[in-house]
Length: 215
Image 1 (cartoon, rainbow, N blue to C red):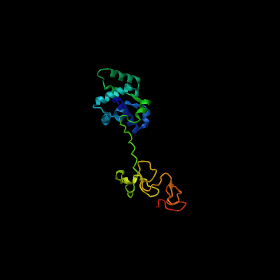
Image 2: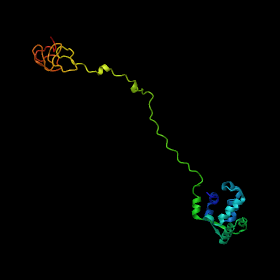
Image 3: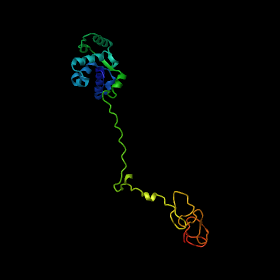
């Protein structure tokens, strides 16, 4: 923001806080210098080091620089502009001019009534992360996978085949047609008493009732 923009914004702000109706009416130049934006009361807000700096910025405003105000009469505005063209403007021209009126132009006025661009804008805080679900204190802890007992390896091994008649163990690495212990056929099971056909898993013959594998 330039010194001229800051001065105009200060002028608008002081009027808006004391007499807003004057924002839309012509304002005497002497009122601006003496009561609305006097140097001593506003130098810190204007950021100006001396009264000469203050008078120079006001002269630029009244000369029409930036298009912030309309200065009347036109002869006064032209005189102010001529002084600014010189290498060493006569700042006393402001006090010598009489009946000078300043009217705030509508567009700069609307901008000055808006937010101050020099005030840093703080972005909204990011949303808080969602809260973790509440876990009741009486819920038991589950064991980790590494803490589970290992399965009994012996239980996973398949049982070796047995004879349907005598119950003897049969070789598991080859095809077995007859039991090496009792000689009975392992492909077709026959009852030892009545020689009737038996189904695998039967404990007794359905013809004579003899126990399967009984001598």
